[in-house]
Image (cartoon, rainbow, N blue to C red; front, side, top):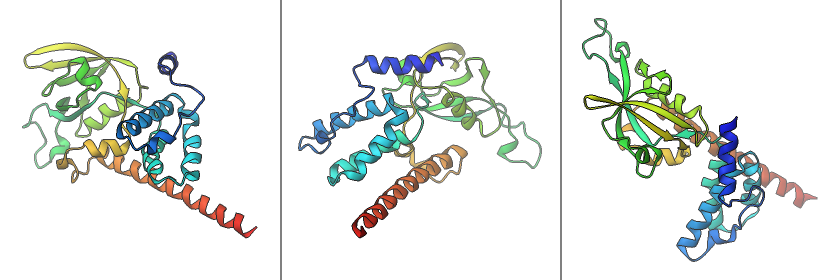
Length: 242
């Protein structure tokens, strides 16, 4: 609870208002940089005011006739729809403990895994800032030892995402022949649409639980927004009949 409070106090201290939604007019500015700056300002406001942001932004989205504003509000609505969760900024795969150690006639599911191999570190993320590198193997997250079956990456993701943004965590990492400790402060998990955009093309056909979850979340958000738009249309028709 203290960590959550500290996170939101830190954002408020940065100058983002806890009450007033930033002006949305610059979202349709003729200047690209102004549009980008405006969207970032609203995004920061959403994070700082997550409990009320969805309702406020939806109202603005439904009442505006400006197509540029609408387009830019969609990812902000998606940000407001999902609860902020912790984020490291890596792509990982389970590390096989012993490729030969599996019961006869059984597939990959029967193999035992230890740690997760980092296959990519995204730039400007907590992972890069903390010094994590490609080919590092994460062995431990705080007191939780990384090990288990082929769904290990999903377990690791859950272990990280159960923490709110800005939570400090300790990692035990194997790098070459050394085992080192790395401390980092979690960032904010990208929205499902952002995560799909950053996925390697090779993962699109892989039906892992984490990949399926992201696409299901995107579908959930789209269904919610389409439902709200449909309700607004019905309300307008009812008003005209009156």
